[in-house]
Image (cartoon, rainbow, N blue to C red; front, side):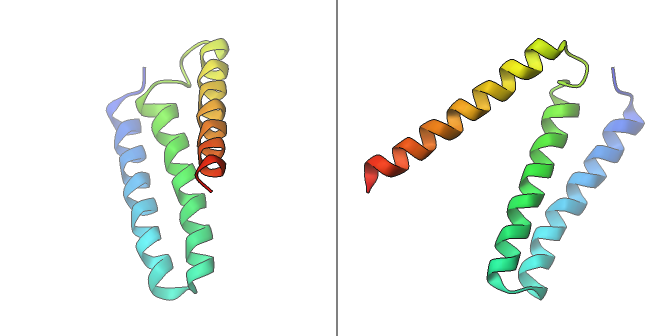
Length: 85
């Protein structure tokens, strides 16, 4: 189990990543800021899932099942987007 120091460092990293999104839109073009925001969002998702949901400490099969579930939700979102058009 992670200790308080690890949780604090992850929390600070999440704050920095959140601030990075704001900075992107202040100093970069819209397209570059949008791409950077997506990259930072993925990094935040991985930090939250890995440390706060303890996926790093779980057996690999649970991590693979979680990844498969996220992939299926992504596919459903894409399918819903095509059905709306």
